[in-house]
Image 1 (cartoon, rainbow, N blue to C red):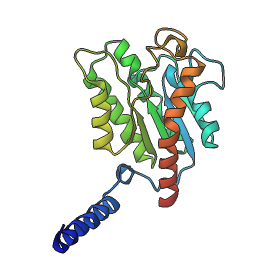
Image 2 (tube, rainbow, N blue to C red; image 1 turned 60 degrees about the vertical axis):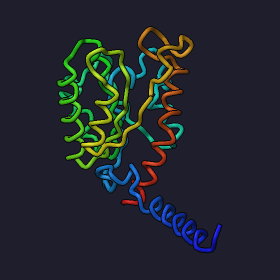
Image 3 (cartoon, helix red, strand yellow; image 1 turned 90 degrees about the vertical axis):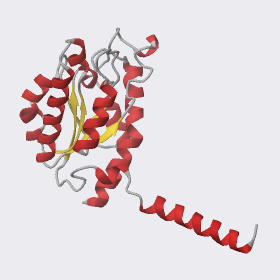
Length: 213
Protein backbone atom coordinates (compact mmCIF):
# COMPACT_ATOMS: atom_id res chain seq x y z
CA UNK A 1 0.00 0.00 0.00
CA UNK A 2 1.36 3.40 -0.97
CA UNK A 3 1.73 6.36 1.39
CA UNK A 4 -1.22 8.06 -0.29
CA UNK A 5 -3.38 4.95 0.14
CA UNK A 6 -2.42 4.78 3.83
CA UNK A 7 -3.44 8.42 4.26
CA UNK A 8 -6.78 7.82 2.56
CA UNK A 9 -7.43 4.75 4.70
CA UNK A 10 -6.51 6.64 7.87
CA UNK A 11 -8.78 9.55 6.94
CA UNK A 12 -11.65 7.14 6.26
CA UNK A 13 -11.14 5.47 9.63
CA UNK A 14 -11.21 8.83 11.41
CA UNK A 15 -14.40 9.76 9.53
CA UNK A 16 -16.09 6.53 10.61
CA UNK A 17 -15.18 7.17 14.26
CA UNK A 18 -16.47 10.76 14.09
CA UNK A 19 -19.75 9.67 12.53
CA UNK A 20 -20.16 7.01 15.23
CA UNK A 21 -19.43 9.54 17.99
CA UNK A 22 -21.74 12.23 16.63
CA UNK A 23 -24.60 10.04 15.37
CA UNK A 24 -27.67 10.60 17.56
CA UNK A 25 -28.54 7.54 19.66
CA UNK A 26 -32.05 6.16 19.99
CA UNK A 27 -32.14 7.63 23.47
CA UNK A 28 -31.52 11.14 22.18
CA UNK A 29 -34.93 11.12 20.46
CA UNK A 30 -36.88 10.13 23.57
CA UNK A 31 -39.23 12.86 24.73
CA UNK A 32 -39.05 14.36 28.24
CA UNK A 33 -35.62 12.99 29.21
CA UNK A 34 -35.33 16.04 31.48
CA UNK A 35 -38.58 15.24 33.28
CA UNK A 36 -38.69 16.79 36.77
CA UNK A 37 -41.17 14.18 37.99
CA UNK A 38 -40.35 11.44 40.49
CA UNK A 39 -42.06 8.09 40.00
CA UNK A 40 -41.55 5.06 37.76
CA UNK A 41 -44.88 3.42 36.94
CA UNK A 42 -45.60 0.11 35.21
CA UNK A 43 -48.90 0.56 33.38
CA UNK A 44 -50.49 -2.48 31.80
CA UNK A 45 -52.70 -5.53 32.02
CA UNK A 46 -52.35 -8.93 33.70
CA UNK A 47 -48.80 -9.33 32.36
CA UNK A 48 -47.87 -6.26 34.41
CA UNK A 49 -50.04 -7.13 37.39
CA UNK A 50 -48.30 -10.50 37.60
CA UNK A 51 -51.20 -12.92 37.09
CA UNK A 52 -50.03 -16.48 37.62
CA UNK A 53 -47.33 -15.64 40.17
CA UNK A 54 -47.14 -14.74 43.84
CA UNK A 55 -46.96 -11.13 45.08
CA UNK A 56 -43.44 -9.85 44.57
CA UNK A 57 -42.82 -12.20 41.64
CA UNK A 58 -44.32 -9.90 39.00
CA UNK A 59 -41.89 -8.22 36.60
CA UNK A 60 -42.27 -4.70 38.08
CA UNK A 61 -41.20 -6.04 41.49
CA UNK A 62 -38.28 -7.94 39.97
CA UNK A 63 -37.18 -4.96 37.89
CA UNK A 64 -37.47 -2.68 40.90
CA UNK A 65 -35.16 -4.94 42.89
CA UNK A 66 -32.66 -5.13 40.03
CA UNK A 67 -32.56 -1.37 39.50
CA UNK A 68 -32.72 -0.45 43.16
CA UNK A 69 -35.59 1.93 42.47
CA UNK A 70 -39.27 1.74 43.46
CA UNK A 71 -41.70 0.96 40.65
CA UNK A 72 -45.45 1.45 41.08
CA UNK A 73 -47.34 -1.54 39.69
CA UNK A 74 -50.41 -0.12 37.94
CA UNK A 75 -51.28 -3.33 36.14
CA UNK A 76 -54.92 -4.47 36.03
CA UNK A 77 -56.06 -7.94 35.00
CA UNK A 78 -58.09 -7.92 31.78
CA UNK A 79 -57.18 -4.37 30.84
CA UNK A 80 -57.56 -3.33 27.22
CA UNK A 81 -56.16 -0.14 25.75
CA UNK A 82 -59.68 1.31 26.05
CA UNK A 83 -60.08 0.54 29.76
CA UNK A 84 -56.49 1.58 30.43
CA UNK A 85 -57.12 4.93 28.79
CA UNK A 86 -60.16 5.40 31.04
CA UNK A 87 -58.08 4.96 34.21
CA UNK A 88 -54.97 6.80 33.01
CA UNK A 89 -55.66 9.97 35.00
CA UNK A 90 -56.25 8.22 38.32
CA UNK A 91 -53.59 5.52 38.08
CA UNK A 92 -50.78 7.30 36.25
CA UNK A 93 -51.10 11.03 35.61
CA UNK A 94 -51.98 11.81 39.23
CA UNK A 95 -48.91 9.89 40.46
CA UNK A 96 -46.18 12.32 39.35
CA UNK A 97 -44.96 10.05 36.53
CA UNK A 98 -41.31 10.40 35.54
CA UNK A 99 -41.11 7.14 33.57
CA UNK A 100 -44.13 5.08 32.55
CA UNK A 101 -43.56 1.58 31.19
CA UNK A 102 -46.58 0.86 29.01
CA UNK A 103 -47.38 -2.80 28.33
CA UNK A 104 -50.77 -3.09 26.65
CA UNK A 105 -52.42 -4.72 23.64
CA UNK A 106 -52.75 -8.40 24.53
CA UNK A 107 -56.37 -8.20 25.59
CA UNK A 108 -57.18 -6.09 22.54
CA UNK A 109 -55.87 -8.95 20.42
CA UNK A 110 -57.78 -11.59 22.42
CA UNK A 111 -61.03 -9.60 22.19
CA UNK A 112 -60.64 -8.95 18.45
CA UNK A 113 -60.40 -5.20 18.92
CA UNK A 114 -59.60 -3.42 15.68
CA UNK A 115 -55.83 -2.88 15.38
CA UNK A 116 -56.59 0.70 14.35
CA UNK A 117 -58.44 1.24 17.64
CA UNK A 118 -55.57 -0.28 19.61
CA UNK A 119 -53.07 1.98 17.90
CA UNK A 120 -55.20 5.08 18.37
CA UNK A 121 -55.66 4.32 22.08
CA UNK A 122 -51.96 3.68 22.60
CA UNK A 123 -51.05 6.93 20.90
CA UNK A 124 -53.51 8.81 23.11
CA UNK A 125 -52.05 7.16 26.22
CA UNK A 126 -48.53 8.06 25.15
CA UNK A 127 -49.39 11.66 24.32
CA UNK A 128 -51.19 12.28 27.60
CA UNK A 129 -48.30 10.86 29.61
CA UNK A 130 -45.87 13.01 27.68
CA UNK A 131 -48.08 16.07 28.20
CA UNK A 132 -47.62 15.44 31.94
CA UNK A 133 -43.83 15.51 31.37
CA UNK A 134 -43.45 11.74 31.64
CA UNK A 135 -41.04 9.58 29.66
CA UNK A 136 -42.81 6.68 27.93
CA UNK A 137 -41.21 3.26 27.65
CA UNK A 138 -43.24 1.15 25.23
CA UNK A 139 -43.08 -2.64 25.46
CA UNK A 140 -43.45 -4.43 22.13
CA UNK A 141 -45.33 -7.73 21.82
CA UNK A 142 -45.87 -10.11 18.93
CA UNK A 143 -49.31 -11.70 18.59
CA UNK A 144 -50.26 -14.42 16.05
CA UNK A 145 -52.50 -12.22 13.93
CA UNK A 146 -53.17 -12.73 10.21
CA UNK A 147 -54.47 -9.20 9.62
CA UNK A 148 -52.16 -7.02 11.71
CA UNK A 149 -48.45 -6.72 12.45
CA UNK A 150 -48.49 -5.75 16.11
CA UNK A 151 -44.72 -5.65 16.37
CA UNK A 152 -44.60 -3.11 13.54
CA UNK A 153 -47.38 -1.12 15.24
CA UNK A 154 -45.39 -0.70 18.47
CA UNK A 155 -42.29 0.26 16.47
CA UNK A 156 -44.29 2.80 14.46
CA UNK A 157 -45.77 4.38 17.58
CA UNK A 158 -42.43 4.52 19.38
CA UNK A 159 -40.74 6.20 16.42
CA UNK A 160 -43.38 8.82 15.68
CA UNK A 161 -44.26 9.58 19.33
CA UNK A 162 -40.64 9.52 20.54
CA UNK A 163 -40.99 6.69 23.05
CA UNK A 164 -38.27 4.34 24.26
CA UNK A 165 -39.05 0.95 22.73
CA UNK A 166 -38.13 -2.34 24.40
CA UNK A 167 -38.89 -5.19 21.97
CA UNK A 168 -39.12 -8.95 22.37
CA UNK A 169 -40.29 -8.98 25.98
CA UNK A 170 -42.26 -12.23 25.64
CA UNK A 171 -39.99 -13.90 23.08
CA UNK A 172 -39.84 -17.63 23.76
CA UNK A 173 -41.80 -17.40 27.00
CA UNK A 174 -45.29 -18.37 25.84
CA UNK A 175 -43.93 -21.33 23.87
CA UNK A 176 -42.04 -22.73 26.87
CA UNK A 177 -44.27 -24.54 29.37
CA UNK A 178 -41.63 -24.20 32.09
CA UNK A 179 -42.05 -20.41 31.95
CA UNK A 180 -45.86 -20.32 31.95
CA UNK A 181 -48.60 -20.53 34.56
CA UNK A 182 -51.28 -21.12 31.90
CA UNK A 183 -51.62 -20.70 28.15
CA UNK A 184 -51.23 -16.92 28.09
CA UNK A 185 -49.46 -15.90 31.31
CA UNK A 186 -45.89 -16.36 32.51
CA UNK A 187 -45.08 -17.90 35.88
CA UNK A 188 -42.53 -16.55 38.36
CA UNK A 189 -39.63 -17.69 36.16
CA UNK A 190 -41.23 -16.12 33.11
CA UNK A 191 -41.75 -12.79 34.84
CA UNK A 192 -38.15 -12.86 36.08
CA UNK A 193 -37.01 -13.31 32.47
CA UNK A 194 -39.18 -10.38 31.36
CA UNK A 195 -37.60 -8.19 34.04
CA UNK A 196 -34.08 -9.26 33.06
CA UNK A 197 -34.78 -8.23 29.46
CA UNK A 198 -35.83 -4.77 30.63
CA UNK A 199 -33.01 -4.20 33.11
CA UNK A 200 -30.22 -3.18 30.73
CA UNK A 201 -32.37 -0.87 28.54
CA UNK A 202 -33.84 0.74 31.66
CA UNK A 203 -30.39 1.33 33.14
CA UNK A 204 -29.38 3.11 29.93
CA UNK A 205 -32.52 5.22 29.99
CA UNK A 206 -32.14 6.15 33.65
CA UNK A 207 -28.52 7.08 33.11
CA UNK A 208 -29.34 9.34 30.20
CA UNK A 209 -32.30 10.88 32.04
CA UNK A 210 -30.07 11.73 35.00
CA UNK A 211 -27.64 13.48 32.64
CA UNK A 212 -30.47 15.57 31.19
CA UNK A 213 -31.84 16.77 34.52
